[in-house]
Length: 156
Image 1 (spheres, rainbow, N blue to C red):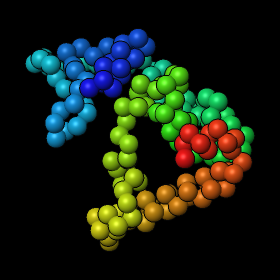
Image 2 (cartoon, helix red, strand yellow):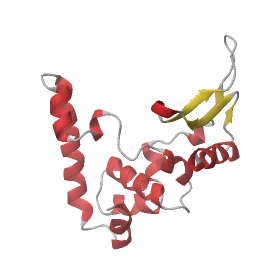
Image 3 (tube, helix red, strand yellow):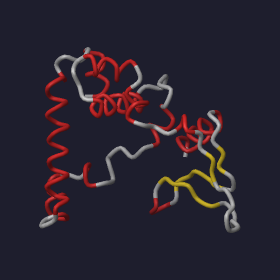
């Protein structure tokens, strides 16, 4: 509940407007945005400034991302390291948002291998997810030892 309040305050401070929406926990649904009232057709529900859209470029544009890029990481890995660091570091500009994200990816890229094989067996998606995960893991392993120790400690 505290995270939802911190995220709502952060969004408002940075110019987002949720009109008739509430950010809260919803039982089985988990965290989410819920309607607080009925809406009319065509009514604006939310305004989110472009600067609050977290892109790979924005995610990697911090001290951790820059250190990762200098160590030879791909921009995707630099962004991932920056996101992991930002979720843990309260002084990070995106901390309230990053802390509100699920601790594990809800999509197939974050599933354990056994579940991945069970649920996606016989599909093209299984091979694509495995290849993408392998590529990211290889990229991270290539630069891990080159990253400053303070980054490795926080995101390990």
